[in-house]
Image 1 (cartoon, rainbow, N blue to C red):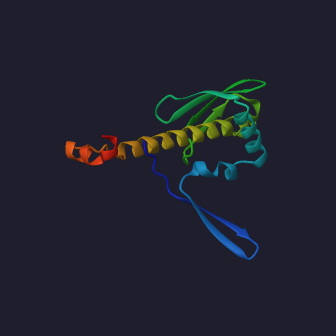
Image 2: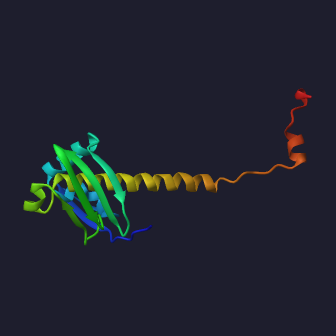
Image 3: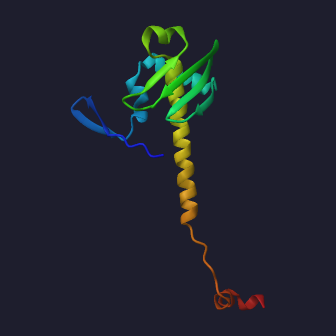
Amino acid sequence: MTQFTRPIHLQVVLPNYKYLFVMKEKNQMLELIYDEELVHQAELLLESNSIFNLSNIGSNLYVGNVKDGKIYEVEIQSPFAKKQKASCDCVFFTQHKICKHIIGLLFAIRNEIKTKQETKEVIGEKSKQKLTSLNINQMLDEINPCWI
């Protein structure tokens, strides 16, 4: 499934320099969109394999569990889209409408999408390789006289 997104322009100003970065997808900017501390905590959850049972249950709805003291159920609909909706049953989410569990699940979804794209590329490359067929004359030409 191909999801078309508008490029997001990010301008970073460094001393005496201006750079304009074009990100093709919002999922490449998670670290810039959300609070640095929440992102760091979410990365720790991902690295410690605390995010599990990630499932795409259709209609661009992802569900997963995050073990962080207790097990939280996280749902994200239309991840990386402007109309993204998310929920988590933790207290922090009810107060702030975002939490480390949601960001962690977004990281896991991003990794899954990246893995699928890489797999498609490998399969695509293999299918592009053509098997060459040799006729009998070509095979005889390849035989070294010393072998006879």
